[in-house]
Length: 162
Image (tube, rainbow, N blue to C red):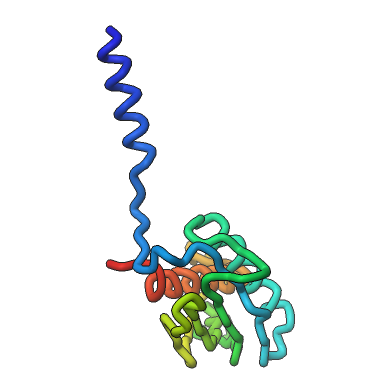
């Protein structure tokens, strides 16, 4: 009986230590997100992107936010924003498309090198106010998905080594 309990404990501990996350830069432990410059007239977007990126990094857990002496930094600026009609039938608008153009630079401050830079990173998403089956029903939901895609791309091009 003792052996079965010990085996269960060992399996539990080993199971909890498994992670699908990898890092191509194990020396990077802390990050600083520089203030986001917003060159659009959608003024709320800057705060939404900034807050969402912080939340995503915190929930991801691979990098800890610090104010002083970070190992790396993320500089992400919003260059352009549009929310336009994507499709319509007759006089009814079926879908809108939100597009955001970012300038993203992820820098390893320990080695003083840019790990990833994309000066024209475009992300778009569609939403529909009329179609209940649409994945996104509001402009805000589309914006949030765009930020999810932004974060995923940053991670894939920086910390993940697949």
